[in-house]
Image 1 (cartoon, helix red, strand yellow):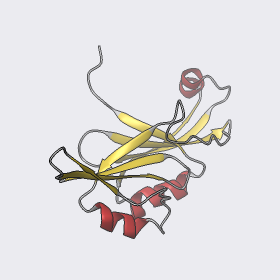
Image 2 (spheres, rainbow, N blue to C red; image 1 turned 30 degrees about the horizontal axis):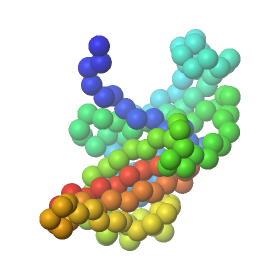
Image 3 (spheres, helix red, strand yellow; image 1 turned 45 degrees about the vertical axis):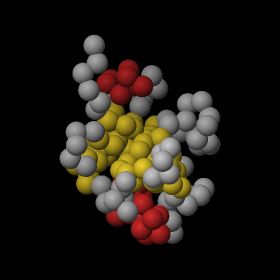
Length: 146
């Protein structure tokens, strides 16, 4: 039986660059670094002589973001659009989505569109949201509730 969420994982090309991005641009707190070789990752992941490096980020709510760089075997690049089967995204609540958009759109996040408002049946704005991609192409969703 499932108990709770643990983490969301993204594969990145360059772990150090990704750590800098998620720390400096998004303001996440790096809580742990990992490096795994040997029987456990090789058996778990099913690649001979697996070697991975990772980093965990936490926002204090119990759900973590894990970034993984495959040292061996090196992975290729899969280009998933938001609507592709197997595409995934991680969503964040933000305080001021318009300011966040302006502050990050030239710092490594790629936005297909600016934030867009959603209205209830009475015409009251209930949220603003936007999709974007990190420097490795992983999809993120940003949501501001009203």
